[in-house]
Amino acid sequence: MFRTTRITTAALTTVATAAATALLLSGGADASPGAVAAGCGVLFDDFHYAAPTDAAFGQAGWTTRNDVGSPGVPGARWLTGNISFPAVNGERVAQLTATTDGSAAGTTHAELYQNQLRFREGTYASRVRFTDAPDSGPDGDHVNETYFTISPLRYDRDPLYSELDFSEYLPNGGWGGSQANYQTSWYTYWNNPTWDGLRTSTAQNRSLAGWHDIVTQVSAGHVKYYIDGVLTADHTTDAQGNPVYPRTPMSINYNMWFIDTAGHTGGTSAYTEQVDWTYYAGNQVVAPADAVAKAGQYRSAGTSHVDTVSGCTTPTSPSPTTPATPTTVTTPTTPSPSANCSTAPEWDRGAVYLEGQRVQHNAHLWQANWWTQGSEPGLTAQWRDLGHC
Image (cartoon, rainbow, N blue to C red; front, side, top):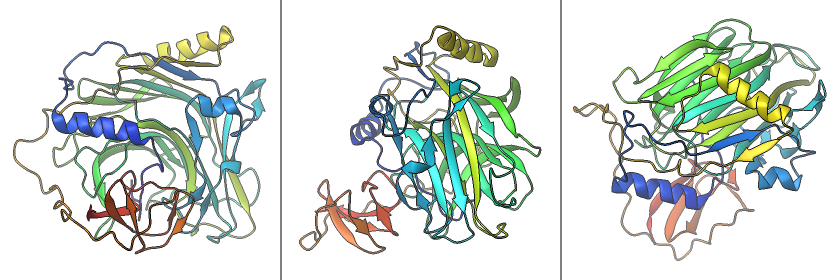
């Protein structure tokens, strides 16, 4: 929705990104929205982990964010320690915690995500607990509680960018409106000269406090969103006619962050979002009730994790629903074919880079757009490509 600055999830798998981009740019096999693809496996996770440091957590493909950067309050920290797995009614859940004292230094966010780009068409489902009030401290903060999929933005107005926000719940508002839950399907976005994007969005202006079954079907050119079995949105294009149907594989993500600190009144407030389970059926249209039932069957059988997803990352040329007449969105000018890299050091994942600093990576010269650490050049919007070395 309306964010003053925005980045994609940091440090997604390089191989997956390169493979997806190569297939998309080469044309690949036919996978237009009208085509029916064979099922390509299932991901189910019951989040039965002890902590983010649990070896099984990483082996299951999950990663936490631990850095400083947008979206949200500039300078706020994203902390691995804000992810935990408490027991609720006898079952472990993934819990995201976000805290603020009204200052950037005193604000922390939380995110966990699948670290490979291998999810596109199919059915996504998750049981999520949203909260209206903080667990402690004063209420009123502009907090965002989310469940979404996303691909890296390679450059401003990237026509292959894909993002589906299954739920972005703002219990206290923060995007110019009151309490709302948003489903948003993206065509693309840009950071310069000012942040903006092309998308279509639907909102429910009511409380969603408590547990909800969030299901999304991505098939045949349509993105259909359901909350507790009720269809809330069916997205195909944005207002300019651009397809919002995902064009490249994405990661599955959950995060919790503060849009700003304008609603804070004093002291320190701590908010939580909980995730009971997550489910994805690749290239399959599963009815909301059936998706919830399948998750229940895994749990009844004592199965806490299944991952048979394969073959879902075969992207193709953009959807044939793309308008024949070019829109105002154009591909940016290709960076200069050569750049002077002689004084630029090699990129170091552990190093902190400030706005304007330059590095070499994958035979390209890159310049930091703002403060960044751990975000790989070429995969996130923190870096601008200055050309080949």
